[in-house]
Image (cartoon, rainbow, N blue to C red; front, top):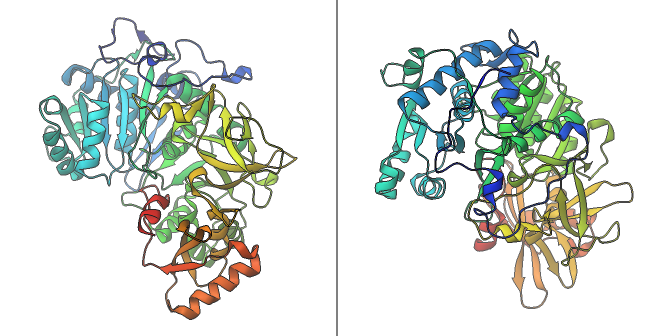
Length: 550
């Protein structure tokens, strides 16, 4: 590995697993390392292993790492640019190991290089979604307390408003702008003047490398801490055992790099095998992503089920001969969407469930082992079980709460909800599942989304999947609505496709459709038509907003 600089002393804000015990409330997860591939050396560093070693020892120096419609960078060229940015952060911004750095921007080569530079310099990367507004950014600034912010010039206004609103402490944040090539203080211009050499920070594998803020599907976001050990273990888990990418792969996708699904799938996991990633100059539409896959010869794609459903019509019209693997995560994958994509492309989608708190996917199966309706089996390296409210494993085929343990786990920064997520060392992502006799896990709903109507348990996603199989339905969300007689009733919010009328005849048509597919008690007694559904920036349906409005 490239030389490590032991003279860099951590700042007072440094985070290390041994110190995290004082920074979290409630229990820490238990970590298990079930095979040698999860035995990470005590001084391992994410960027040192994935970039420095890619150039120095793995033979990837001349392989293309980052692609766009304007420029491609090899691993060696990317390393040089990461080093220059790291030098800007340390010599001009005064970054110390352990300092938090807020990153604000859309998916791009510049964002990826900046994330890597922050972590290489010993900083803690705090990536934020580009669509966040000032109030949401203020909450993150209050929690993360960054000393530096790297911001796309087009997104600076909201950040400036958030900094002003935070007062004197935030006012000391040094804001570094990029994507403003005509300005002398642009990060790119500053980096060009710096040395192309930078020694990776010499620290511990248990130093925190990043803070990942949850996407807010249930309210106030939480900050999950992930160490270098966590990230490197994740690279050896799902991508190695399920995805099985190679250095020949070209990866494309829509999840933001500020989202752990995106950071893993569109940066760290490709780097771990010497593959390359393509970043667009404009946000994808379903049509443009299909066209880009065809144009660049992409072999792996990542996006959410809703996007795949919208892409299917365009993919069906024109073949995608290069595409080999399609990964879905971020929300439940309806079987109707899986079928639609397979019919359009011939590709059996790879589904998976992960969590910001666990960094990435821990239940999934490769295409050849897919079982209809199931997400998959537990990823090697993890253990998972379905339990009751007391943590006792329930019989196979019984609905209960998912509990997971493995080489990664939940470590919230100063948040009392830690005690809800980790119990007796096991992580509770908040999902209701059942497991069959063969070990396949079947997603039912978020634990707080289970609908109990007249004593029957109904999983909202099951009803959504049935509705999506009707040709009139573009999108839908299902919740439980309080009801004096039944306790709850099943209520559906439906977005219809163009040319379909949202009248009472359609209500009855959709109700009869569900009754024909599912047990009668599961049909939606109320259907409300909408023009759009509330979703997070990563595409997750915000059912808590539907419940509040329902």
